Image (cartoon, rainbow, N blue to C red):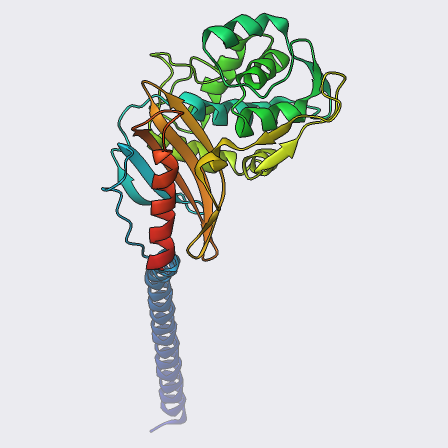
Length: 328
């Protein structure tokens, strides 16, 4: 073999080596790419499973309660977890009801959000006296023309169920009750209360003043996020600021405690509540309790009785909260 042929042979051999090396590198790149793609796919597939696992843990954190609402005096009832809003038990919760004085939950929430200075003195308007008398309304006890602090009106509306306070709040915020009702219904819409409409700020019976216990539970849960509302709602006794007409103030006591010897229940206590009654609405109650470190909202409506008989709405609340304490 000549030297020329030998060189050509060596060149061909080198080219074949280079070609083989290139193919090897290319195969290695392809394999690595496929491996990385497979790993990413596995990661993506595993992420939803991790999320589901996380949700499952949160669900399991909510106590599994056995609560029977069937034996309550109230025709309508709903119990929800205050933190999550999850329904724990319900009874005719989406049926139309008349909320009576539970209306004042919305009245006070809108007031707390719109009264810019709670220390401002507000005059009780003489024009409301006729409506108070005509409707045999419950009142906080302020006199017509008396100048009281705006904050005292919020306490009077919830604790004493004072229609005098509700009517005054409405006029102070919006000028008239009609304009204030627009704010209340707008708030109801914002909160997604699809089966609720307000036609009166105090809860006097009106065909267009209606709701459901489900909507009212949602409303109360949202209202409790407002710091001022929460403070008022969970107070049992409050003395208003001294005025010329009431030098020592007026002592306001929550109507919830009228039929209660104690706020204590098994594992906790009832923190606050708002009662209501009209002939059409029956006895109603929206309340908040803390039991074994967890808070619950209960709304009941249409219990038999009246303002002068045994408080079956309060009896129902105690019965429900006792069940929670004993089942945890």
